[in-house]
Length: 147
Image (cartoon, rainbow, N blue to C red):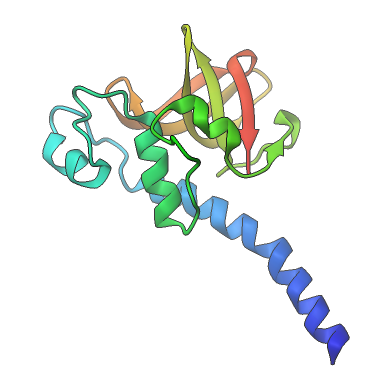
């Protein structure tokens, strides 16, 4: 009996992260297309900030993390804070649903991995050209992948 309980616990521990992170990607997709000005009222209500006046990629990831039962990192509003989220993953092992931090100018941007090719990472996130959308980033700009 103890062995069966132990094996069940291992199975749940190994299976749950896939569901959780795929869930983050699925949740984020529900907001695709919302624009910080055109849909300001709706975004303001779910983010708790005015996206037309505030860098909001971290706020968006915080919303998605909470919706999927994850705890955002302290200071989650700042994209760089997502370097402390979950566990680190090498880029070569990244999979859809992982949180990706990229270099953006002199700062950082954070999104959720949708696809990864040899040269680019496709992320969905907030504040990508003023909206929630899929955008491509060079793999060379990826600073961290977190699961």
